[in-house]
Length: 109
Image (cartoon, rainbow, N blue to C red; front, side, top):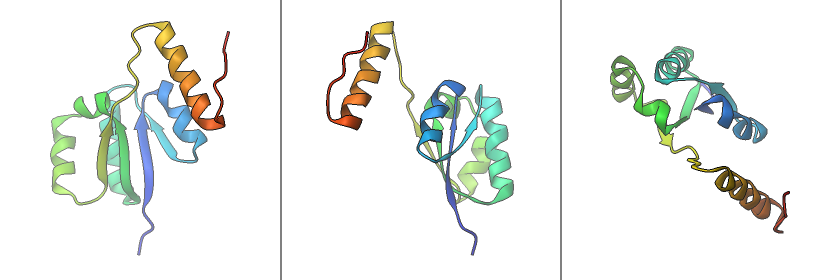
């Protein structure tokens, strides 16, 4: 029996957090690149669950989407990426992550 693992496909700016959590991360710059990464995972037959950034998932080539619909594994789960409209929003997001991690609100300057 093949051991299945979790893999994340995300843009370079989001991949670091998943890597820090010990998850295998494949970076992709657009939907076509993400499609190539998914095709490779299907060939390797080792991924059980693939978490993919929603915007990359929406831009996958139609052929890759058809292939995924035919297969039972890997299970592909699109997740939304952060949407920052201003620098202060990104700052607040980071402060909130730190608060959850250490249980204390930190003041970043």
